[in-house]
Length: 231
Image 1 (spheres, rainbow, N blue to C red):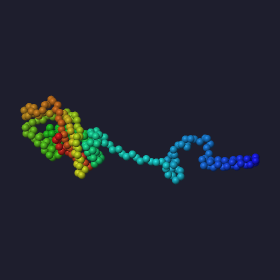
Image 2: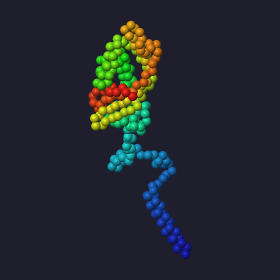
Image 3: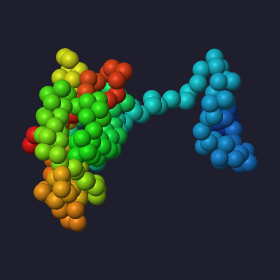
Image 4: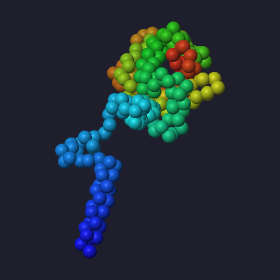
């Protein structure tokens, strides 16, 4: 009976030893000195390429799409308004178009053209005005000269200038922007005897104008033309 029990124990020990041997082959043997960080650290791209077939396990994320810069439009209006959408269409047609740059030019143009009109400088006006607008300005200048009036004008400054309307024809590329101005000038007109017959040489006068400029986008000429001075 004792011999039978001993034989059974030897058989069970042999089976346990065999299972332990197979388990070590599958899982590997840990000695207790392994660096846990060595098992947890991510595989570097160079290590991945050096192993096996050289394929990398690193996933390259696609670049984020470029964000359109409409800050120049937001400087004057909301993007979802009719004016904002029209200005955005102009930028799409001519990527170099910037509303802030246009408005800087519109402010300078207003002062230059207003002073040219008041002083009777037709040559300057002819370069920047549409033919029908130039004809109206020239007619008024000639009328003052016919009365022998001399005009003294000083430009004080622009209090406000903002785009209030815009139109763009994608077929022709013609763009139009209407700008509302509020400015201050000192202006007086004297007759042949030097008597002030219009304005006041010592008073600042507020003026408000609504001018519309036009230009064909996508062409070489960057100059805008004044096509309307009505409100």
